[in-house]
Length: 131
Length: 131
DNA sequence: TCCCTGACTTGCGAATCGCAAGTGACCGTA
DNA sequence: TACGGTCACTTGCGATTCGCAAGTCAGGGA
Image (cartoon, rainbow over all chains, first blue to last red; front, side):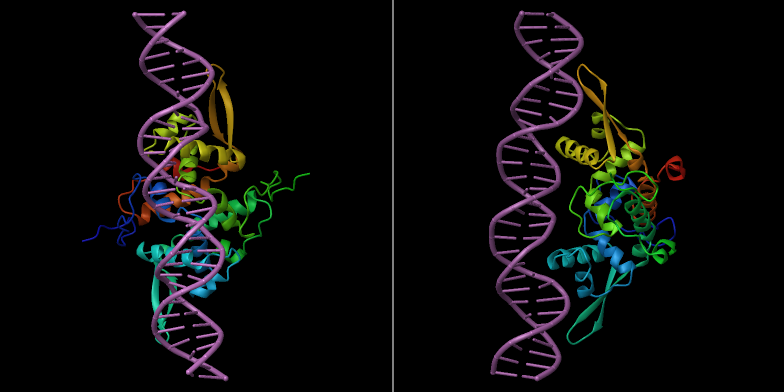
């Protein structure tokens, strides 16, 4: 039986080689690139369809989006569900594990807005949201 | 004259091309890879010399470490200072901008420890630290 | 029947990663 | 003085990833 997280839910098994047991390093093994957390941002702010992610201002490429969504699904951070049979269309959503990334995104957003010029102010509802 | 951050300190000018004005995306433009925040972790937990970073459990390569420290210095997140003239040796330290990443690292650590198997519990002093 | 759309996949050149060796300044020892 | 070792990098190079652009396939509409 799968071991449990500290909160009692099944822990994410190790899916990619861990460089160490450090929780920071292990998290970065999963999400440490320029696009993955941008996709999580879009999911947290209500997007769920493939074309909606393409419309984000950063201009992600379709092969990168598809590949990152697959990796997030494999990591149990995102779920993918059929919402239309013909033609088949999937909705993406954050799992509870993915939703738990909210404080990470909020902390990054706060730092980025405070420290980097030419960044817009994140919406208050996003910064005040609680998991 | 340089524009100011919301806190009044000089804002980090845009040093790498921004994909958008989003503070999350802009932060990831700087630190969105597998090693940069691991180095920041090591700085937050007291390391300052090149060989100390090499001793971390993840086993970073010397060219990657050198290249990431340079990028962090260029980004104003890390400072580099001579502490010995012969032979020349430098100490690395977080700038106030770099110290301000602490809540980001704490949030990542909390998520990783809760959600990923085989991660150790981060030390209480680290999780309770305040900038 | 034909053309368009959406969600991908593929090909390919460019960029990055990371291993291993090399470099240069310096130090210690014989 | 000579030699070998150490440290903080740099370089070379093969492997991997990135990302642009085109292609594919199933489906839909005129």
